[in-house]
Length: 622
Image 1 (cartoon, rainbow, N blue to C red):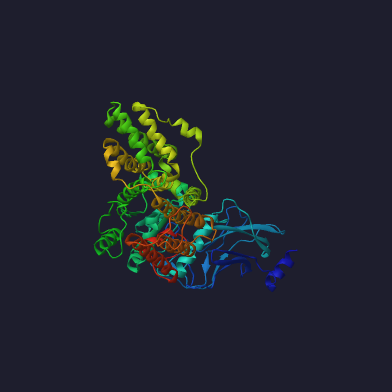
Image 2: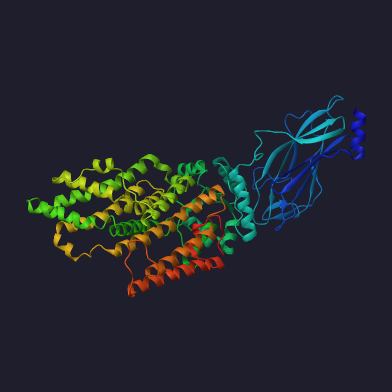
């Protein structure tokens, strides 16, 4: 048997099977030298553009990158009898030794012959990482193969399952990361060479590798659901000078959206924040600086400070995410104002004032009654914020980025939008309305009447309250949802409080009429358009391939143009009055929405739409 195996080996009839993974095909076989058997592994990078290269076999194990290695597994029945050798020259690339681009590298490891005369299974380990000049694919570390040897021969090479082998079975998240790497290289080959950890342990290992190489670790805490993160990634971080500054260190992109809950918890535990975007520079000397400001590439002064932060010559900037809190509070105020003029809210104004007028005629004091009524409205919405904060606690950012959360919000917006368009009628169940009180008098009655208003106006308040609540959750801070609900409901309650104090002001308010129905139709169309923003995140996370940049821009453009024609009275909805003459207000609204529709359509022709581009995490900006 032994002589037959040796004959097969020498005649070249025995070929090893191949392992193809992450840009490289590895073939392992056995050859014979003058002394004994030699394990041979051939690493062939795939032919692609940009070209791939492999790191040298002598790359330090504790530094950046993954060395190309061939080794015997600890359980192997044989031992090396000489050093590992290669057949390719190496050159330096960014401080690391690499083999030439696209070159097949052959490693040889002389080994002792296995004992006995029968076949012996010898487990061997191969490691490598394929890279371009800009980024790397997922490393393969100690992937195990089995060489069946007898004396100095081999009859087969086959993969051996090993549950502890790292990267032997890439997860769905890792495969998505590989696809994203490929897309980034195709669209922007001069971009940042991100290292993307899958676990906190991987992140810590990358930080140690950077420091061992004498470089700073630059961390980017981000996620597909973070609009400001996507905005920075598609504007500032795409600039060649910025990319070079990142690549001069070790750039690490930390995705804290689900399913990376452990990375979100790691950010919270180690850095005591859930803020995104967040850039942290961990210097090799132990220094730590942070940057969380969102800015435009045209802001040269801020850009200069950002470069100083990246190279360590200047302090970071933790002054906030570009006015994120101000925008959040503005959204809460505007949401409350829009809610006030919705069809199920506005008619409550004269009803409320009439109730307080009657109580004033009976001798009641209006100030405390109005205050309790406003407190009922505010208390109902704050209760929702407290519920969200209390239930989800420190995982608010994870909650906001979860595709299930975005699916629920997107479907809710779509359903409520269709409801505003008259497809069906939504209202809270009768038991909930009855539980809120009714028309009782006194302070308790005023408080319960405020709760009644908040519940009965559910159809109109839910879309705006939901938007404020979602924005509050995305802030990732304790109490943000509560604060948002307080500002939103306070904006609603304040006019009721003032009108209750001065019933005569009611006469100055415009009467409810057809204009309110038109406002409802426009609001319904806007709600449906807003739903696509949340569904786009689900599409990216679950790989639907349906609701991306193209679909959303087409839908938004069509909706904008539809609103423009509706404002002009060219089409009418059930319950609308006929438009005999389009006045200045209608003409202005039509021009604004028509311009918006055409601008959105220009994005389909390759125009960069700025902030809008950040809504599409899976699509690159032009």
